[in-house]
Length: 282
Image (cartoon, rainbow, N blue to C red; front, top):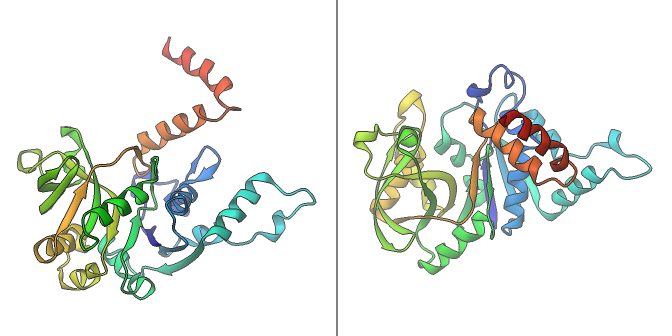
């Protein structure tokens, strides 16, 4: 399976930390976010991964390259793990020349993807799911006929509705919605539901023709929701819920929370972290 990872966003919510460092390279415990995303794709069966970067994102490419300066007589465990990841899937890179939105970033993958369905994971979002989220979407894609794009959604609180693309659809079976329309970041009063698009997709290649037909929206960007709305009209799109937890690292608070959650799963860090957290609650 081919997977596309858009990683060209500017990371404005993390300035000044992301002035010269890609937000996808922000660490969660001891690994950058982008490594978790690639690990997730590989766990779902991806053997060919295209990361869409932009200017100032060179560090992302360097992270998955060989590092002769780190070769030591005794292999470093963390580097062995990273090298094994790179062996399990071929990682390619292409640049989005201008920050023109998520749809434009995905369009950069057209020649690489070809005529087959492909997965999309965002470069700043970690999904902790069993089975992996893309594997869940792939299973749904096949169950639902293998002809319509499938997007992952989850219920979002009222306070967050205006931060998401929201689904207007009909529930055909538990957790499966036939999409009528997607509304990009609506006001709460205008939201057709509380189902928010989470940023994981199994897309048909028809998405590329749809992207070529849409007009720039907010901030001059091409919105993926606009292209998906065309697909919903012409070939159909399904929105599906999933089992697992999503961490949006583009949010500063969630990035901090993710570090704590992941550190508490680490057998070395947990015994040292728990007493500190208990003391902070007093």
